[in-house]
Image 1 (cartoon, rainbow, N blue to C red):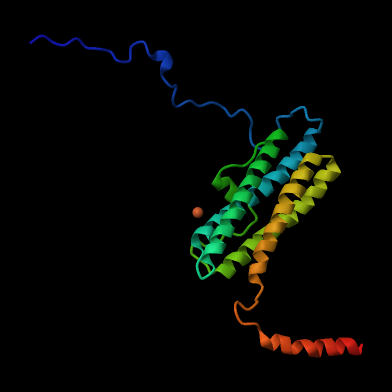
Image 2 (cartoon, rainbow, N blue to C red):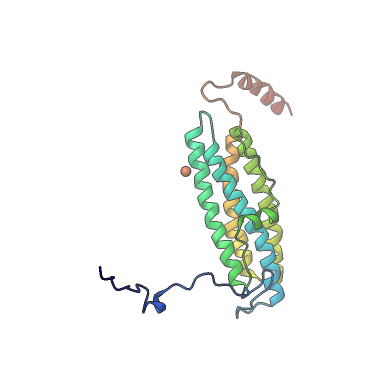
Length: 215
Ligand SMILES: [Fe+2]
């Protein structure tokens, strides 16, 4: 039997083949500023980038804490809590992008990977297990407060060094969003009755107003 001619299926396709497994030195080491023409000193950019990377790591952590609690919520408020946690997750996710792109526009490098975030964040690590809703909310409130505290200090620093753009991101985006989310969370921890009014507290009222009018 005559042999079939061998066809080289790859012949002539060299230019269309992907160039795999490429490596090279990184173009900018982490922690260095690739100066852009934005009329800010390199030292000002470096300080803002440092601060913003801390806020970024903490915002990524808070964002992920919301998703954890969104999945793991339990109890009779499940539906509304499940949705609220996801709404806040989405808002924090937008902040993550805003902060990261502010860092890049200052000529810095934004943190990105989970391991680097875990090494940097100051928000305490939660357990892997599932917690009650009041504990979830308390944990989130504490995380928000860490973020708000550092964001206010950094906003002042940015303003003093002349970096108005960073000050604006910290105040208009980070501080305002976090304060609003704190309000929505904290109201869930106010211990008011669900159906029956607490009569014992209304009995105490006249006694209070009596002493007030006596003054
Ligand atoms: Fe979901």
